[in-house]
Image 1 (cartoon, rainbow, N blue to C red):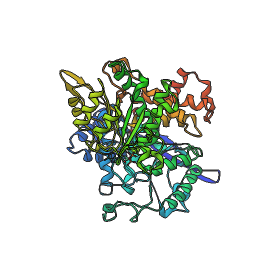
Image 2 (image 1 turned 90 degrees about the horizontal axis):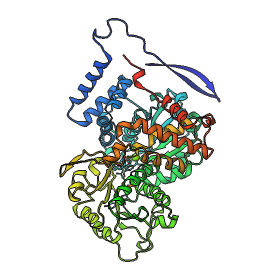
Image 3 (image 1 turned 180 degrees about the vertical axis):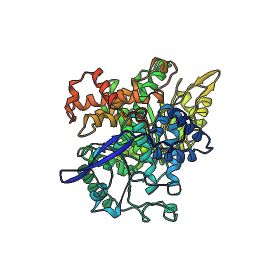
Image 4 (image 1 turned 60 degrees about the vertical axis):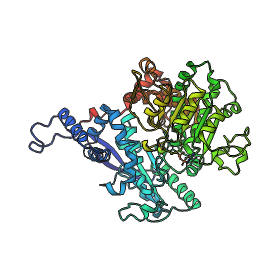
Amino acid sequence: MTIVLTPYWSNGVQRLKVSPQPQPKPPRGLTPPSMEASVHKLRCLNQLRSKDKNIEKYIYLSQLKDADTNMFYKLCLEHLSEMTPLIYTPTVGDACLQYSHIFRRPDGLFVSHKDKGNIGKVLRNWPRINDARIAVVTDGSRILGLGDLGANGMPISIGKLSLYIAGAGIRPSSTIPICIDVGTDNKKYLEDPLYLGLRQPRISEAEMNEFMEEFMHEMSVVFPELLIQFEDFATDKAFSFLSSFRDRYPLFNDDIQGTGAVVLSGFLNAAKLSSAASDRPLADHRILFLGAGSAGVGVGMQLMSFFKLQGLSEEEARQRIWLVDSQGLIYDGRGKLAEHKKFFSRKDYSGPPMTDLVEIVNHVKPTALLGLSTIKGAFNQAVVEAMCAHNSRPIVFPLSNPVRLSECEFADAVEWSRGRVIFASGSPFPECSYEGRTLYPGQGNNMYVFPGIGLGAILAKASTVTDSMIEASSLGLAESLTDEERAFELIYPRVERIRDISAQIALSVIRVAQKESVDRNSQLRQLDDTELLKYIKGKMWDPEHMSHL
Ligand SMILES: NC(=O)C1=CN([C@@H]2O[C@H](COP(=O)(O)OP(=O)(O)OC[C@H]3O[C@@H](n4cnc5c(N)ncnc54)[C@H](O)[C@@H]3O)[C@@H](O)[C@H]2O)C=CC1
Ligand SMILES: CC(=O)C(=O)O
Ligand SMILES: [Mg+2]
């Protein structure tokens, strides 16, 4: 497919009309005699599989995406469980760490502090302005659990958007990966002669707030139909930019809201399995978090809905959740707390600081232990055994990314719990067998929901992304398990079904947007659910029908 760009003016801004054109057959002699599309797919797959290291596979796939976008997405769709760990976590973490060294050519938009006052001008340099529908924006300040990676954060925006395209059929030309470069406090990068970003420490909080005001305003002027996903901002900024901008522009924060939705969904299914193995009512679950950053608190807030769905009040729901950070259990008597930790701070404990996780598990007696702490191995044998002492089927979700920061490995959790654990992790682990049974880990990663949230919000032309739209994505995902998946005790559907799942999630999100009157595309109101689902699926971009060869 080639793209033809025709300039035109709208609201005083020059835009480009994007028209995809079928690729003309190359003149005879310019391709080899036996260039069959299906054989070439096999050739690409073989080249990919011949590489030993995942980072080499990542580089190969980035180049393939550049040279033959359709082929890249055909491979993604046909081999999703093989491709996802390469284009996303865990490999994307290594790609970010090494970005300045493996960089070949630009693929995304860099907006730097040097552009302050001229951000609109920089945004207008994007070649596909009129087609833009979704941007993933990071400032690189907390990439996965890897910390401040500055301008090296760009691959996370690229990776998330590849999943939008593969998982929800968003047109590649409608996506904009953005990395805001406002410096880095990563000393190693500042000293690296190959580092691609600004060679300066991060700007102050006040300067950052001013910069973001201009950035968001200009984004809405230049890209009036754009939905924004904030990604991997350090926790304070993640919370403050979400609350400053969410009522003014269509946006959501993936780490707070997307993660909240995906974990609520998995927890709904896990709690049913766990409760079925004991006589414990669903309302009696007790959840302990290791990690109280944007992800931990975001998930905690979303899990309040689990208890409210069981009929509990807001206060009763709050009482079911305990948070632990690097200083131990979070409680009022501990001293000054960061703003985002206050809501879940316990009032029913007043002893000395409690820092040992086994001691905390024995104090709280949780039914579920969730890790969003970036602390590898924090759920060790003693911790998992303590969980088993209180539960016939303990729920253990080590959700930190990438895989080498996971609080616990699946095989260990199975072994230490003697096959009783109900498990989901942020990055994928292989299945394992225990006493003749094959056990499957879940992947509790926001990748299950953000493509569908984005697709729904884009099609409804939502003016804002509401909490109920996020919750709808979660309930839609929880209900999407097939009978076969339930029989295998899966708590998330198989990733191969992502397009169907995204369509279902988009439908739920659109219906809530309509109910809350934030849909600017009111035509979709006339469709019943069957028609709407057909409409959504019909809108999905399909690489098979756009052959490059
Ligand atoms: N599975 C998923 O879909 C997602 C996973 N994550 C992962 O969650 C992790 C955390 O992300 P954020 O909350 O944004 O980061 P953050 O840095 O804001 O939060 C980390 C939290 O862990 C706590 N912590 C650090 N060391 C600890 C220790 N030794 N013991 C107990 N707690 C400790 C910190 O006090 C802080 O509360 C990252 O690894 C990230 O990749 C984030 C979003 C989505
Ligand atoms: C998955 C994700 O968004 C994170 O680890 O930050
Ligand atoms: Mg993230």
